[in-house]
Length: 201
Length: 201
DNA sequence: AAGGAGTGTAGAACAGCGTTCTATAGTTGT
DNA sequence: ACAACTATAGAACGCTGTTCTACACTCCTT
Image: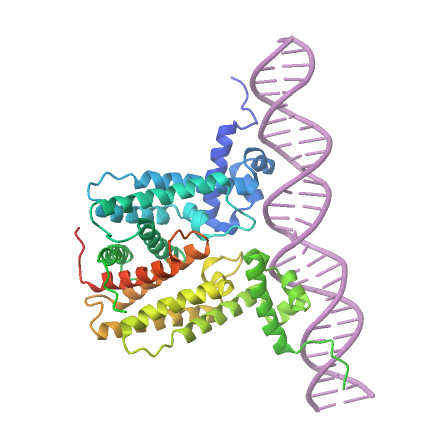
């Protein structure tokens, strides 16, 4: 049996660094994610962050792409009713955000200094919006949201869910029952957007 | 006439520093706001940031309190119909966010490293939520949002408006007509939350 | 089996960050 | 006129992301 090699295999390094980064964000907040601290926690040399990723930004890209992948997998529900599908998707989105706060923080909440998403990251994000838009489009085929442009409805839904989750994670949620108020929120919004035009103005 | 004094009066310093900070955030983004750059732009010594404010955090507190003050003044509409009041308030909120991006960024969008709001700042923020909640309460007196807990409705409304504005400022808005889609969004939400219970689940 | 290519390592170095400290110079009130 | 106050410049400290250099180890080819 050979002595334990002092070099860590490449694949273990990238996975270890990403999970160490998520731990750091979770435990010490986004500003706790520094290259030196990350390397220390991952049991790796600081230079490895530059060898295996494109620096700190590369680690962030990996986290964000990972987050969108999880999010996309959650959207794959097989409910027949597209309206229920939309509600279930919204609940799943919020659950993802609350359960994977580090992912969600990196994806939507915290603007890391000097970070601009890579081309791949932006592509994956756009794909995520398309999944939502497709679900809204399916609703229209069933007669829901008549006379609306489906990307607009998708934008409105995303804004609502993101706004609720963002305030919740920031600690600015004064709701009596957060789960129930969220469900009521989404159902109310869908109902309100479904009815053609109740605007009194 | 005495020669122009080389010392800047205190009151001019605090005002100048705050407006210089807003300029920096607007022109170079939140990470462009550094103590040295701020002092340079305000034509002041870096130490003045610590003499007149409580460091960089103090400047951020001043900006945020300033923002909430502006926001509160915009909420003072004298419309008789409380529902219209709510819609007008939402539109005014969005206008404020889009017009005073630096304020809104500091208030809700960017998490500055090492910043935690002061006690005064949190008090002003809570007062802002109370203004919104009072408007929703007035709606209930007129029969709108029956069988709902008014702070919950206030939370839902705030979440919706903030979510829409946040995505818009972050450049993630794919709506066909941003103004119209926002109006439709708010009106739809209010209508949907007004109708008692349409939940099909 | 030997040797070169590739890669992970440690550590120093750089500019910039928020913040603190010191010493100087200008203003103001008595 | 003199003391109290305050804004100033500038150095300093420990931190940041990043780059660079020199060294050690593994693996593939010959």
